[in-house]
Amino acid sequence: MTHTTSSWHAGLQRGAIELRHLLRSGKEMSGHLANVAVALLVAAYVGDDVPGTSTPMTHLVLAGFAAYLLFQTGLINLPQLLVTEREEGVLLRLRATPGGIPAYLVAKCLQMVVLAVGTLTLLLAAGALLVDGPLPHGPGDWLTLLWVTTLGLLAVIPLGAAIGAVLPNPREALALIMLPTMGLLLTSGAVFPITALPAPVQQAAAVFPLKWMAQGLRSALLPDTARAAEPAGSWELPMVALVLAAWTVLGFLLAIPLLRRAARRESGSRMTARHHKAAQSGAPAA
Image (cartoon, rainbow, N blue to C red; front, side, top):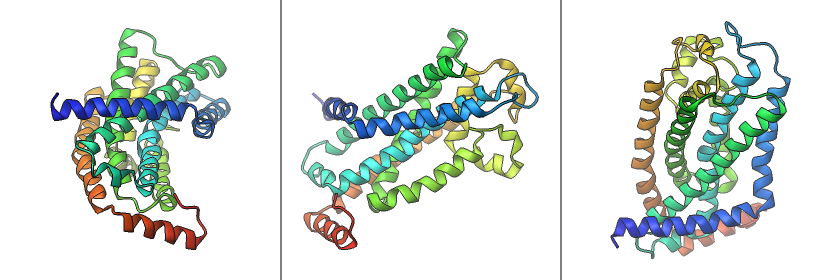
């Protein structure tokens, strides 16, 4: 068995074990269910149609939240998890394991993909049942939903791993990543038409994956008439694929080197010092 194959095998095994633990954690699962509930409540209370179309604003909001929940899994949940496990000494133990970092990354990717797809499925199913939310209308739309979801997760999960490798500690991680993430939610056209924003804001949002994830999911979930509310008047699916692929490459180029660097910098004395500092500040040790 080659080194790469061994890393994949070990990573999938580790990911399956961690996934079972996650699904049995009521506290963890309640947080993800709360995100779905918030999205449904917001969608239920918006009215009217998307300007210039006959598409209900509820449908646009649910498509946008679907993209945001995928984005959040990679860019908020994963970095927090990595920072917490780093403080618990997981990366220190991986230093002594051949192929440990690639296997660890495979495990986290599996865990986040299953979590994100499960959350997306729940949101779309509950939305269709409770607030007459959108679903793909034919095989082409289902195929678009599949590849946009897959490429979107590939774009954000490795990037989230890279961010988690450099964040200082769990107590600061959420504050450091939540504000920019919420800013992208408001500027990427996920909760209201992006054409309502100033042109410079639209151009800035177009650099980041959330804007294209939301646009791709709208193309799968909304009727073609909704294209009138897009900046280019079309779904721009080739551009969606291009931007998400570029972020995928960047994320993978950053993730493994940064995780290896974080593992090399770990030591027993560093971990003890962090726990001592946390105890002095009154925070519970990781």
